[in-house]
Image (spheres, rainbow, N blue to C red):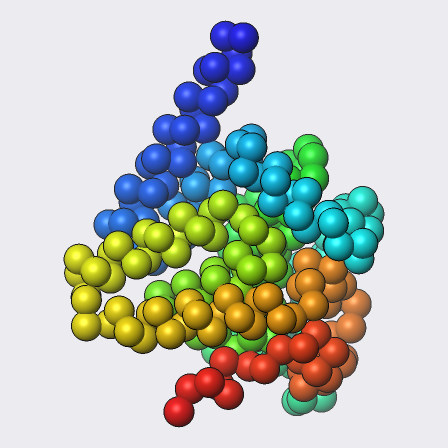
Length: 223
């Protein structure tokens, strides 16, 4: 009992640290990872795992433990300009991002696999949905993710973003609520992103991905 209690306390403190940091500065990526790591062993996380596994195509990729190697951006830039691979490489290079920036973790169970796979494909989700990488865009994508996965972390980040906006920039509340609403509706309508082996089909046109998955990009909703 004592080791379990100690593990719970450590998870709680890790999550609390991340939540406080997010409220202070929603752009702190490390705080997001702290929240994720702290929530891994909660009942809410297990319920989210059960939810995504209720979809056979997601359950299959979880069982496989599918993870892709680090992408070769220069090679992807040789793909057709309308392809997912070209869009991804251009996006990463133009933004000055590192495709391996995410915090790694050992895959010990279904929950840890799901976290790692979502971290690995986060920027692909951005590209396919067309959500921006500013705070409002990130929270719109979190609403999309919440609809798709029921992950507790997504709900916490959305709550933190709303509180931060209310206290620090209330004039932006309407825009944020709009992105959250659109993101959730998009996520509920789209086929499961977790089931996709994106990296095996870099050459597929981005428009084809969106059509197959039932996604209307964010740009459709922005005047």
